[in-house]
Length: 227
Image 1 (cartoon, rainbow, N blue to C red):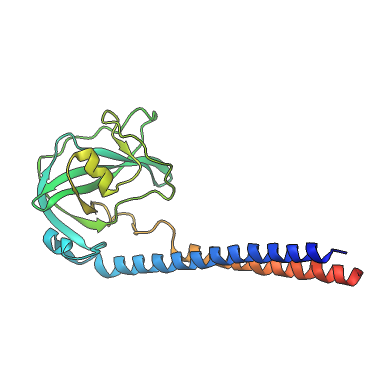
Image 2: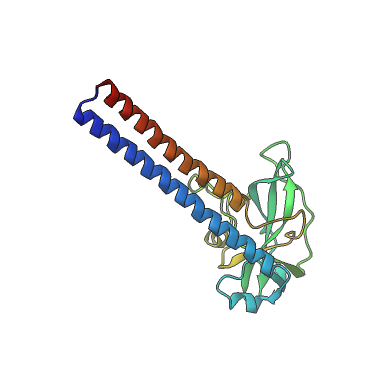
């Protein structure tokens, strides 16, 4: 039989664990809602075209098509690391386009990674002047950030596309979104994990909370019965 002190301590521990799991479940539900909004945003906007000036007048123009003119800055190519396509590791090539409204990061597409991490894909230079049509997307941010990594111009690989980071690399302010050139290919969506996955995780957290209390109730009932 447990003493009153030990019994109370176990009850407090059970309650604390339950609160933590409930909080995790609620967080997963909020993430599911966010993903639903992102998918709805994409469905409603991806066929509508804006000019760059119109896009900059909107607080969050993500999902719209964008038609833009400009010229690419020579030597500004960078490679976004850890990008998976069809189960293969690779990079996304990001190029700086100078427009009359500022510097725009252009995601030019995915390239398979060479056998060695010391190598980068070989690509042909683009004509300086460009007239592009793509989709406005949020700057890529990895799910887990392991701290700041120093940029090496001789091996121009980055883990994220934060405008502040790109501004440091390219030497001038960068517009707060990315122009993605291949968004219509392969059924691309603005989320990696769909809302149904987050809902499923929430259900698991709530189910574990119930299981903890069922186990605690059974344990206390056994102790009381033995007493």
